[in-house]
Length: 85
Image (cartoon, rainbow, N blue to C red; front, side, top):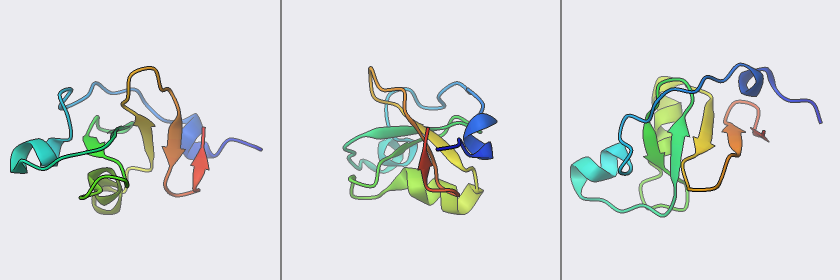
């Protein structure tokens, strides 16, 4: 399977909130797993989390690629092409 262009061109920005989901930290919410936006460094919670902030960030900011922000995981996901890299 060919890698999508978004995954090929994804950056590697520093995490904005390395201690957890930016929105959950601000509101006292909880998360299951974390995702880092590879365009701006936003840390959001995964779709198994109650608020799904990583996906919400994609819909608002249109930043297409996230990477797992879990220790030991390196996978990336493109929301536009629904492809893992």
